[in-house]
Image (cartoon, rainbow, N blue to C red; front, side, top):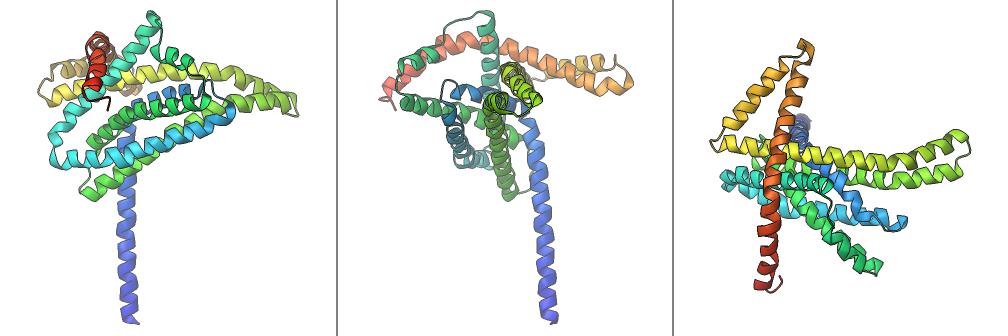
Length: 323
């Protein structure tokens, strides 16, 4: 009997350790996931465009296919690479983060440039040529998963840099929780967003009360506004996150003058506010300056990406036989 009690006591001890480990993983995942907020917002803002033009019945299946591809990107492809980097080439993490941050700055600046100087979209022109809805859906899903791969790589790299895990198991578990949690959050919210206008239309036609029908009409009118707000917030978040990544990376590489100046300026601006608002004003000032730097860096990258890197990609494809 004493042996059984001792065994139960050992099992209880193991369970406590396991529970503590789970708590540690969740806490680390929450901290790492918070660092990726800007990329997540942009991901949620960008994804609904992939179901535009399709029948309502196809919207959720398309989102589900993209979500599965996103999980494959994060868990199967990117997580092992992230762990290899963390354990065998940690010096590569900062340069890779800076490359990802530059991509975010470019994307955000390109969106603003397009608003200020409208120009035709090659992707839209290509879509107009496709007559088969099934083929168009395949193209859209593949394109969305490719775009997701870049955003997922940035999310996993940012999360990896934020993790302070004591061992490989904790790193793996934390990255897996971040990857799954982000995917569920992004594509779950996207699913709700793209179906809200259908819910509004249903209520406007079928609700038994005037209040219900009015709510439905309000939803239908509000969804385009929400999409515009998401697009603006996503663009601002990209520039903020991208700019802060580049500035922090410069500090890590020994070029900290810009980061120090921004910190000092934000501190000075914050302490102009009332005592209760110092922290918030300082954070807003720093985020704004990071975003302005991100926009400036993105505008510099636009001609480089469109005039140099873009034309090189088709040449590289031809050289490798299209693979």
